[in-house]
Image (cartoon, rainbow, N blue to C red; front, side):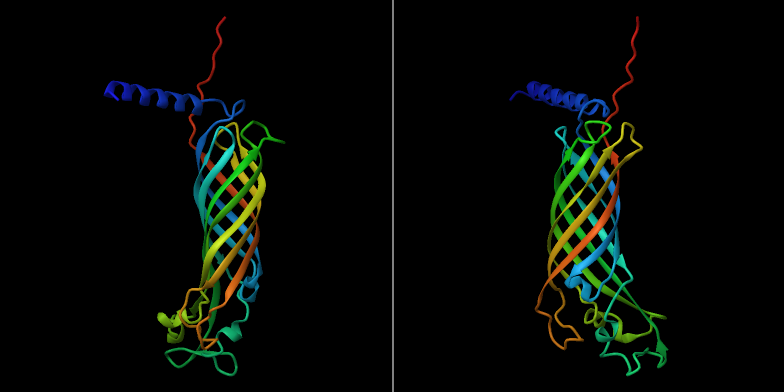
Length: 253
């Protein structure tokens, strides 16, 4: 293809994209890239409840909304929580009969246990424009696949307990990870201005996980089990759209 025709095609495509992006949110469905950050409160079920209670996540990602109201993108969320169960069983190999741990200075020290991890999700779904202020908002139904990982973080009071430092900590942290799938149902609002753009959803995530460690001290063996880790939660997401605003219309008589 001659260069002048190639340049003409590229210019036409760019003009079409700009014209599409400049349609008004209030009266037309538009396409736009969306950058978003989110917070979620999650309740565990399945094998997760052996060690963990309620947790939170915070994260972000990017999506593309088509002019047919399809939404596709990805998110990365970091898991954090302070509800860790079965502490005595987990640390039975390094605690005294009274449940205390002695640090490297020969004195009792206190330990704090936390849940940490992440959820990587690729999602696709549909915005159904009902109960909405414009054609770009409405009920949102999403499906996702990805990867989930979680572990127990152990911290000593002064950082002087060698039993839980370095490679030794890996024998107690119960690191698990694996493929995940799930879905979300909620409401998607793309406001008529750039200020108010958010998603509120109920979510479910199921992870098929396995231990990522070669040895577990409390089991005195490698953990070869398969686990079913479930999260139920509520997610609130704030979005920044990248579409160009249509110019203000003026009428002259």
